[in-house]
Length: 129
Image (tube, rainbow, N blue to C red; front, side, top):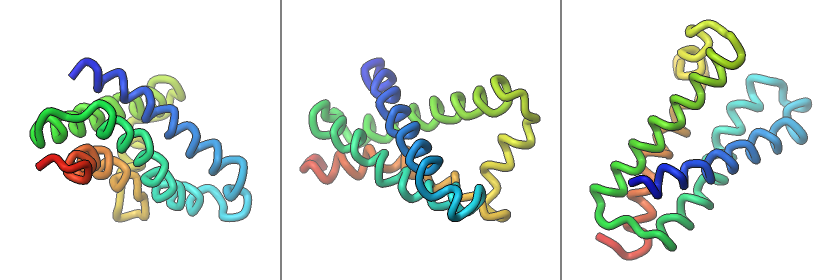
């Protein structure tokens, strides 16, 4: 599992790539809120690249391990997000929780769901059952 903890850093690189694409291309056209919604879907696509690569070249030993890796990546992602929003940016906790508020149009939860389920899906896709 230690190896997969380090692989999470690769996911972080692709997340920053997604944010850079958003900021440099369509944010000014669509505005802050809609561009964040769009970037959830581009983020899912971009995150699929390293996750598929990890699953293919460093295969999970079992379905259980693939699911546990997804949970690990979820925890690391949420720790990182909380640190960036609350501790580094000095914003209130409510800003962190607002990013998860589907009822107000926030779609971040779909990235989190993808981070959890995609290791298992790629585990299965590469012929492991």
